[in-house]
Length: 62
Image 1 (cartoon, one colour):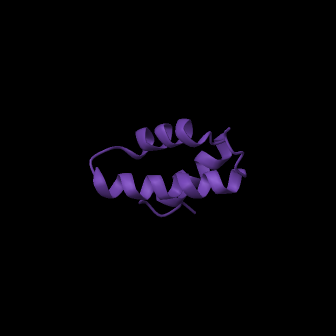
Image 2 (tube, one colour; image 1 turned 90 degrees about the horizontal axis):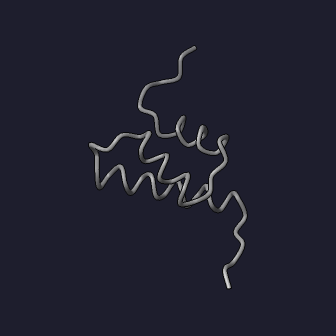
């Protein structure tokens, strides 16, 4: 029987997955990694956007 996880735990697992994948496959685009993480961890669009901001290399525009 599957266990229901809180959304915050899924976001943490997705962030760990993204960090691991970026170190293992540095040539892979952030967009494709975010798509995969979104499907694997059932992320909301807001969660995916927050992870994108976290992992984006460019500083935010002011």
